[in-house]
Structure formats: C-alpha cells, structure tokens
Amino acid sequence: MDNSLISQFSNAVANSKLLAQKPDNATLLKLYALYKQATEGDINVPEPENPFDFVARAKHQAWQELKGITKDASMSQYIQLVETLQQNS
Image (tube, rainbow, N blue to C red; front, side, top):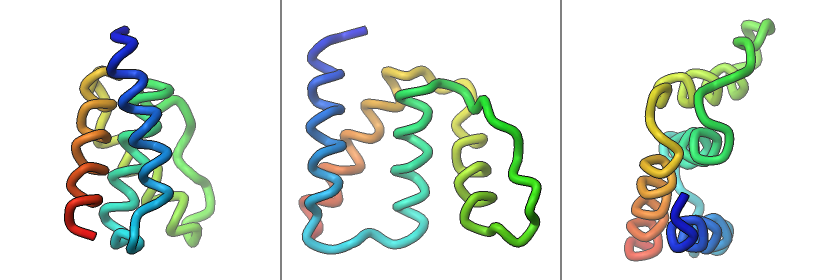
C-alpha cells in the first residue's frame, strides 16, 4: 500500500471531523462506508437483527454496496469526498 495514500487518507479522516458544517445523512453514510471499506475491506459483519435499528441497517447497507472495491480505491474516494466537502463549506 502506498504510504503517501495512507498519509493523505489519515489527513482526510482528521479533516472530516473539522468541517465547517455537518454533511447530510447520505454523505455521512458514504463517508462511513468508504472508511470501513478502506480500513477493513469487504463487509465482514452480519446484517443487524433489529429491524427498527435504522441507523445500523443503513450503515450496513452502505458498506455492503462497496463490496469488491479495493482499499486503495476506497481511500482515494474518501479523500476526494472530504476535499469536496471542505471546498463547499
């Protein structure tokens, strides 16, 4: 894995916590899923059992949709998304 990419990813993770305004829920889910895919790879946890835990279900679904994307590609997408959010805030 490219150390430069890892460094940029770490910076983007830190910057995501410093955004001037909180992103909408869809964007937050995308950030979550990209982060999980970048750090853990393909989803490795079962679907939440509680049908009323909408947040956990949404997070699971968002991560599931990224299955097969490489860790490097996920990091790059995360970095780009955070940069876009920084420019728009």
